[in-house]
Length: 141
Image (cartoon, rainbow, N blue to C red; front, side):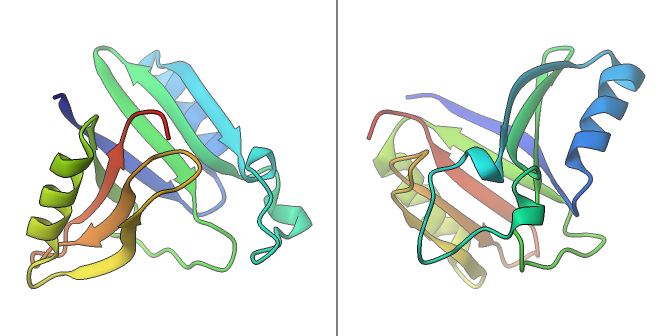
């Protein structure tokens, strides 16, 4: 079983600009970038035209560290202080469940741990100290 913690920056529509800035300022290398428009369509949540070019998920490498990015999904709000979350990555669904359940005690579930198109178990929880974690399980669905 593997387990990694990575900083995840939630941007308010300027993730592309931030990535370009960190590439220059920190010598970062872009590893992955996907826009909301490149995600599978969901008829229950139609994507506004102006959101199609926003970053759904991106990763850069700064030295030995991965730094992840996303713009907030259209309709969600973001405020200063909510920009930085911690992404906990594992390749074990049972471990993801255990971590998620532990962190939600006296905390708040923002997105239940569930299967998504990009992960067999993904969820977002803010713990009792106000720290928000994204639990991401690697692996094939």
